[in-house]
Image 1 (cartoon, one colour):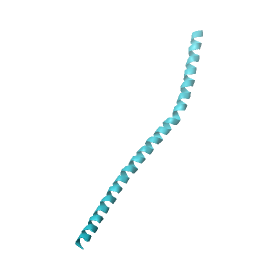
Image 2: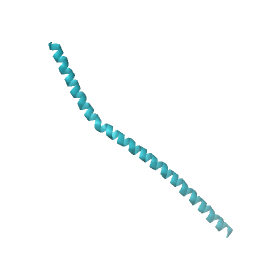
Image 3: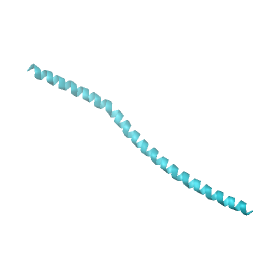
Image 4: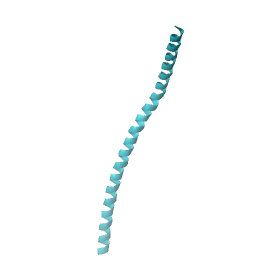
Length: 74
């Protein structure tokens, strides 16, 4: 009878330890997922802006070439 009680107490303590450990692990994973989500959003914003910047650079380069041609004609 004593061994059954000891086994039940031992099992209960182990269960509590596992539950606490899982809770902490879950909190760490959630924090990591939130951080990764934030980084992905920042990256997506950057990725959306790059084509706009590239187009602006093309326009600027074209205008510079036009100015250089106009200066060479004078």
